[in-house]
View 1: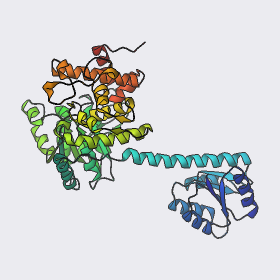
View 2 (view 1 turned 90 degrees about the horizontal axis):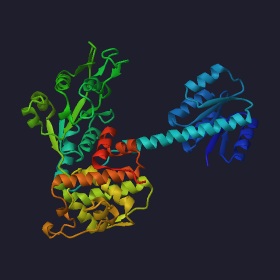
View 3 (view 1 turned 30 degrees about the vertical axis):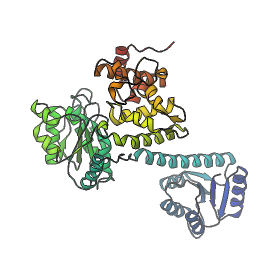
View 4 (view 1 turned 135 degrees about the horizontal axis):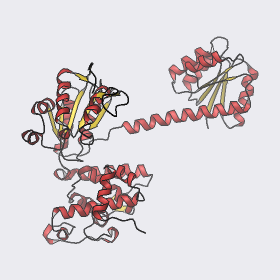
Amino acid sequence: MAKLLIIDDERAIRSTLREILEYENYEVDDIDNGIDGLEMIKKNDYNLVLCDIKMNKMDGMEVLETALGIKPDLPFIMISGHGTVETAVEASKKGAFDFISKPPDLNRLLITVRNGLDRGSLVTETKVLKRKASKTRDILGNSDTIGKIKETIERVAPTEARVLITGANGSGKELVARWLHEKSNRSEGQLIEVNCAAIPSELIESELFGHEKGSFTSAVKQRIGKFELANGGTLFLDEIGDMSMSAQAKVLRALQEHKITRVGGEKEIDVNVRIVAATNKDLLKEIEEGNFRMDLYHRLNVINIHVPHLTERTDDIPVIAQSFLEEICGEYGMPGKKITDGAMDALKRLPWTGNVRELRNMIERLIILSDKTITEQDVVAFANPSGGTNVGASQPTTNSGNQGSSFNYDSFSNFQEYKDFAEKEFIKFKLEKNNWNVSKTADDIDIQRSHLYSKIEKFGLKRAE
């Protein structure tokens, strides 16, 4: 039940408003002056306030300003017997949700109150969602390598040192970058991410440095680049090994001089940005092949953090899997599920070509397709079937050549055949889950739609009639 406060020095108005609002099942308090009204606002959690403008002791506008200084999101509806456009505009400028005249029209009053409460609820919900969205996931694991990464983050984050994060795709490089920002002195600023591999080489400079209107054919208006957006914060250059040589030269200049110039512009713009870069490539090899600048490499590689492949820290898999289990069940609003020790052992034996990202997808699949308890048989049947296209019908088999492994890897003649099979089953599962909506599936598995169409054609996937 919504709780409202009426502040008005006219007893008749307070009584009338209270009677109307209580009839609508609102909980209502009232007071005859602004000073006591402010005390009530401090002590109680009101969802909305109706406040007279002309009152003794304290003017309604002053009550509005003071109250919003205490509780900025509290909706205020101002009431006046001398309503003018100027008064309504002034109230709106000071933060009032709406303005109604005395005597209030019943229907307008109820609609305004309802809209004010809806607005208050939306503001609160938006803040909660933003907090959830901005919450950085913990770096999970108890292995020595993960412990060393956490220790390095604690030491390096408060400094201005540039960091180069290396590791395979899906290993958690972005998570390390986020924690470097969260624990830095720039945490109040923005963390701006740029995936250098996802942006065409001819557009990367515009993306990083911005452009002026008319600087090229499609530049119909001025655009602010990522360096400017990250000013005062952190710029995360993911997959920097895929950046074009011309863009590398400009990034190097920006790092050296702390200045940038927009594409098509002449004015130099000062930028105060900390750079964190990541790559899955061997940059020293790229330098030898002429694909990466050595001077930029040394500028970026002040501190190096290597994130190990999941198969290099299999003892961390139970901790990560359990965290994903709880998180995904919560997202789906499903009862919590348990995973047996045998299932955990089976997960630890998988090759994890997709790293931690693949583990999360597999846990999601197991949650959807398994019963209350996820068993070793479920892992074999659903997470990584060992033969055939009927995932649900697959059963664990013993292969003496794999020393205790529950998977018959001999059914695959080479590693590529195994990868193709696993990729086909994964894409098929995601397509069926999304009712063969290709756009949604492409977003779900984080690949381009055209790439997904190619995969569908390659594996001969068809929607069941």
